[in-house]
Image (cartoon, rainbow, N blue to C red):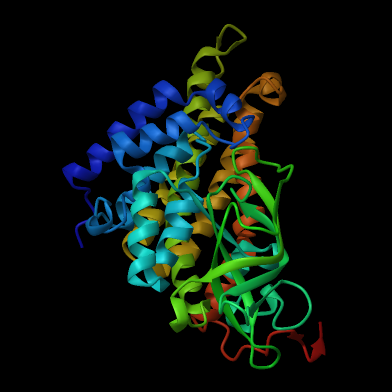
Length: 401
């Protein structure tokens, strides 16, 4: 396999990096997260209109560019480097592939066209508070327990006997960009226990009975929300032929993991670049601290860790089956590099005014949202059969947990 990037792929990276350097520095990032949307709407429109970013991996028939997950991963590596707050992850990486996989022709034509144009943002609302479980990254999502399992809790869906539509009742926590998205893809159970199934339903931001509350998140660049549904009207994704969505969620999760891995690598590389620049300028005992052998060794170790994670992310972009393991490696690299960046910046690295803490929060927040690392690896190892026969879920050493 030829691992080299094409000229078009290199151009995507170069163009996006240049734009973000000019318009998404630390000051702009801080200002963007304090807006009502949690991102800079003007910059998002520019990324959509000039670069076609939200439609990068969408088919051309819907106004997209027709590229693959590799191009989307390269773009997200650059947004990660800048810690760009934007609806790109929630809309293009999580929601759009589900609409493509499950939507009717009419739904795809309507929704994907608007997503590609940048006029519609979307968010995946998964009950249970664990996006990683819903996407099948840290556990088998086919059990349905993460969304209520047909019992009390989660989000329940029922048919409206009057108009034949659907009504939703329940709530979802920690919904990425859930407070500002124009469209919600809500995972809900229907059918009652034990014949329940998990469906995806479309809920407009203006729907009756919908309440959205922005939460205080560790990482401000990843705005999270609580979504409450009280007899809220919804449209079934896939129409009357709608089927259980767990397999589609798992497939989307594998590709999303590869893209997230690239984004985490970008964040780690950004933190490392800033640290290298700082140690070349900061002097101690009459010489730059970067000239000390101990500092060189630490930076060399971080460089190797970032490059190894980058190789894993690029491989996963071409083979999404490797996405969860690549994500684990990238999240671990981002956490370690961000922590070392604070240490090597010395006293200034601990201050609120410096941007080092933004990288620490991004690394910690992503691991809370899509990890943790040890569970990503454990589930991937279990799926690969490395542990032989696996005990039924909920049992450990013969004792119920």
